[in-house]
Image (cartoon, helix red, strand yellow):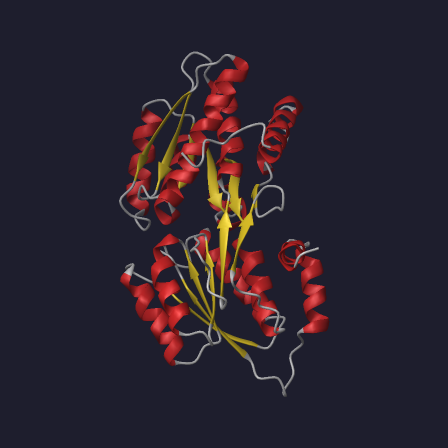
Length: 346
């Protein structure tokens, strides 16, 4: 069993087990100097009810279990990533965590120039990975594809004559297209399997921070007949979720189970397309605390190792037939065994 395999195995143990292990191996002690951890948001801020917030939650959880001093800093522009990295380096933080592809070049440059500092880059990768750095890739297409399949089912159920689903995406960058392309392919797969004609359309916003823009885009798509809105645009996407609720149509969230993070829209959510940012941050902070932060590698998180997932159906658990729920599970199985391609990479 290789070190990398062991690392992945430990990474995805149930959260309670992780906490139990950390309590015995990385306990707080007056004689143990605290690990200084800095977290830098991506665009959208830590109150986005999604990507950034989940990463922060993992850091907070680690701080409750280990001798950790942490600071989380938001950005208002991409250039802020560089200045915040330099802030953490100047203040001698031991581990610096960055998020998304926007942080790739800045994080790589800092890791190469500061071999004594540890770096964790989530949702992006470099090659080769420096020995003091870990990259984490999320195969989120494996979760957004079955979300598209489910959305197509619901749209066809609500309007068999002109069924339509739509997405509101953030800026059209690869990380967003990974959601939207595979979501659309999931709709296509439903059409092929059931001989239906569910249409899919969408729009890409120019910001992750404009809730009103997201609501306007969703309103237009709903007026065009969309009965399911897939929102993958941070705070902009949250605006789309609220509009779906107001219009009485259904939606699918992203990054976290938004039924829990934005409970006001919970009654509209069929499911959410999840990236487990929290578990990765939690475990790698504990690893760094224990001297077990093994850099120089890129981890890949998938349906198989539960790094990406579909959230529970919550209010729709008893509104979805057992037949469609089993069909969704079959789609997941096909993705995991390679028999169903997600359409990503393009």
